Image 1 (cartoon, rainbow, N blue to C red):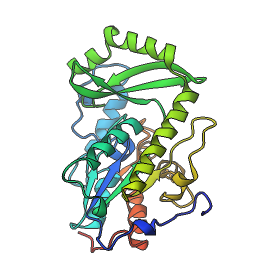
Image 2 (cartoon, rainbow, N blue to C red):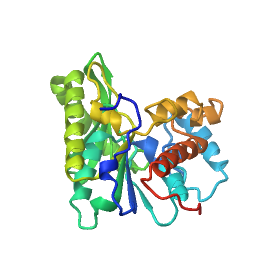
Image 3 (cartoon, rainbow, N blue to C red):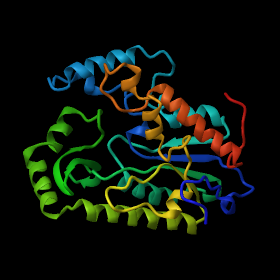
Length: 301
């Protein structure tokens, strides 16, 4: 068994067939958060956010690299440029969402007709608590419940179908007293941070075991964040891509001042990665995959 924190290449799972599809899972930090060029937030009249939204829009307008899309400005989008046309990057991350949505998508993907386990690679941005996925009958769609945590107890929460893209009707319904109050009361009665942390780690390890059983190649780019006293498993630490000396691409970005807030000298209050940050993260992932013969090093597009 290797020491926790070392890069372990899963050689038993590397087959002669090369990777053709890389699936990226996670939250806004993988989805390309901060670069929602077509967001309807720009029309917001909420005085709490008006100034920052104005600064944010000016920042996005100042970007020159094309195409100016959410996809292109994410690290999976930048990784697509590096891997070439023979590998397809699938960015399945979504703002505000976390491990519960990842678990659902992984299961659905594996059981779909088009999925091939011998030529696929999963890259996981594992997330913290406070990102619960619920099904909304009114919308006939999944929504995310984001909330604060205070001393292991539920604080206050709000709902979204898709952060920055919900229309006014959807936002008002999901955050109406009729919907929020009973949901928040339920969480106050039956939610505990320590218990949820154990549940989260347990479910992720079940998923990891499932992937191992099916011989599906996977690595994590953002380690499971410990909530309090629960540590990620040794197995979890072995299958990770390191960012210099960090287990977390986000911590790496903070240390190296690669956030949008850094890029704007604090003018835009946004903790997502800048385009430079996403490029550097993509390069580190690409170098790891090629150096360990997980993918072939193609000529750049």
